[in-house]
Length: 256
Image (cartoon, rainbow, N blue to C red):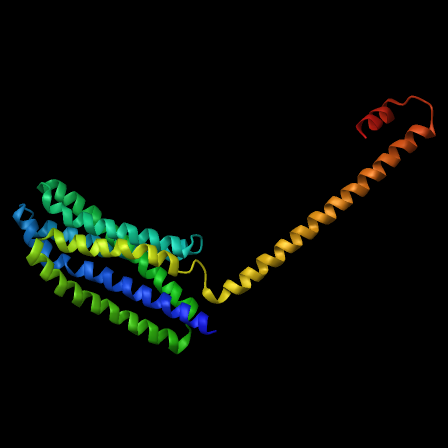
């Protein structure tokens, strides 16, 4: 029980750390992107469209993710979403080096990828929490997790401002995306592919099913041997019973 509780706490702590990184990357878009876009001649209306792409994708993907998690391993969904999110954050930081039209198109694409992957990450996180905690414990963990969202937004602005002063617009995005990519191998080992409480039961069922398969194969082999011996005896009996040549019996004897 102690090992199980420690494992669950490790998973929860990891998910909360990822949440801090996610929201830190979200926080730096608002204050830093509009001035850079205006330098390229992008009007405020288009900037608003680019900003709205993120929540639009988030809402749509959040509606379909529960169905997807019924068919796809939650660890796979989480890791792939984290990779996509980290790549889209770095990509959104690089659009300032592009000309106006390409900046607009890629800005929309990267914001859609950010919203979609973030929705997948949050849905998977809540799915993991719901399988490990119930009632009051779930509410406590959920409240702490909500706190990591605010903490990530706060730290993202504070650290992002320092990085922006040091290296300009591109540096904070690269730093946050790099931290996200560095955390993915650890997350892939920690995040369960199935509920932790059911792992022992599933392993027991797999072992018992393997034993049943082995017993079934041994029974089938012994049964096939008895059938072959009985069929050989039947063939010998049909040959010795009559001396008449019957084509049907002859074919049967040849097949036996």
